[in-house]
Length: 96
Image (cartoon, rainbow, N blue to C red; front, side):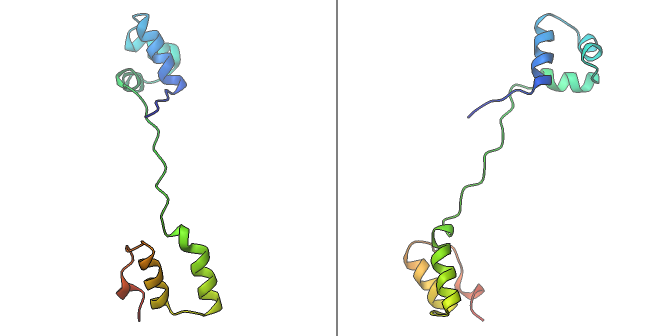
């Protein structure tokens, strides 16, 4: 887990360590006291992690090629990727 402080938060914490009051920090940094209090009470900032890549992307090129060549039906393509370990798709949603 990586932490990354914003520049404003770092300035607030620096002034806080010098025993500045919330009002004095707010005046010095031209922020509202509420914002200063929020930065002062913040323990750490943790950036959001990116979403996990879907396994279906491993099959994407193969599926597109087969579909464009019209070599197999949607059901056959489903069964193929299901056999290869991607059992998340539900068959009724792709058959009509």
